[in-house]
Length: 328
Image 1 (cartoon, rainbow, N blue to C red):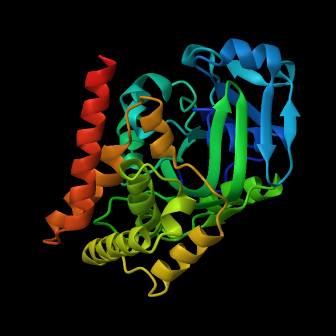
Image 2: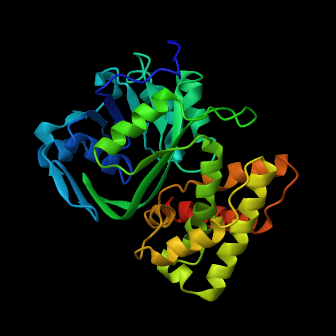
């Protein structure tokens, strides 16, 4: 396996691969392609549609369309070339496929940028490509895939990117290669920012993901329904405090204003159906392991319990089991 020197900047221009061209990968991959970058999209069921009809992005920052003939499209990982940066934007429920999907685009020694929810998703990528070759990105955006090759970007769009290191090791800081990727994303209009501590950013995003994804399913509500109801907001805030305590136990101390800032951003957010609610309504598996089970385990390993978060997780597991039974 090629050893990656984190002190070195990556080559310019960068060649990208996008695995999972949905709400996240379709948006950011589309913006990279629109900006003139070489982007190879690995598509599953949408390959024929995008080849014939192109990629359409309806965005609050400006709509755009990319014809299929102008895109590098792949129906199978076997045809992917070696790339400098491979964006993993699959749902974490499909990470068992990474062993098949990552070897080709990373075969030249390129890095993986994991744009997934929850905790410990980067470790799944590292298990395939090896250590010191994985970065993670926390995506703060409202975006949905509304049809084959059709992305609807409703609000926000920020990515906070950091080097992945084991949680028991010091953060890697802002390396040269990390800054290279951030600079390239910014050049095409993506609101990208580097962080010197990826784990801190992960816990910060869980402060929103845990209550608002979970409650949107259990209470059958949009984010607007939840944030404008005093009881739902109080419950969400209580769960945020449990996330804050778990993060502190794990050595990541979130800023004191994090909870209020998160609530305020949600008040200002356009009415939005969370990705977990959309998955549940469509009968798809929800990301319960990455967003709920992993943080609960980490907290408990430090002697911290998350009673409200655990109860919400149990409720979601019950609903998913009932949905699976009805589908079967």
